[in-house]
Length: 200
Image 1 (cartoon, rainbow, N blue to C red):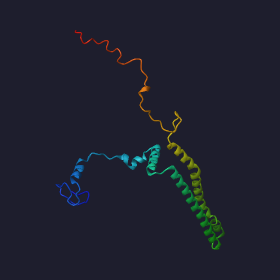
Image 2: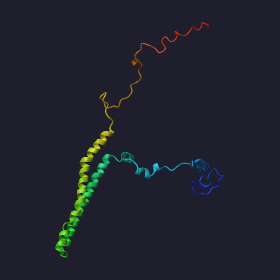
Image 3: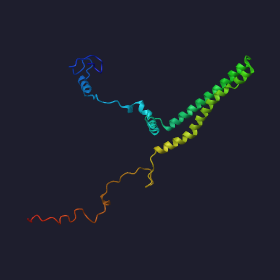
Image 4: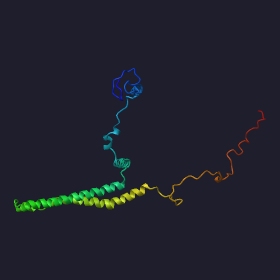
């Protein structure tokens, strides 16, 4: 048998490892008691994710984000940051392409038709610029509303009965609030019993 702690070869009769002192008897008991008839659970694989409903996928995604500590405010911040970065990269690409293509055109080695095409290549940088602007606007305005909605949903609802913000609690035990009843379950139940002195 191999010791699971240090990996050394040990005799099957030993209860403890000679090198590290690990409990080999407990390891043997666990190995012997392990169930061999367990079937493969497809529910714990990626195959189960393929057949998951959209609502379940959304719930699982929210649960994973909650476990990782990703809040709506953090998602909004990341969206604004991504928008600023994407927009800046798009602007940089547009400026670079404009300057570079103007240099090629001014060199005089291109035909007028090619110069017309090259002078307009800077427009390729406008696409990421607009994507960045839209991400930033979405993060500043739309996601702000979503953060407020999530914040309101996470706060406890106020108690409408008493008008206070404290959650309702049970009152202390008070037996004086019980009203006396006009009857009893045991009332007049013994009238049908024979007295103990009577004989049949």
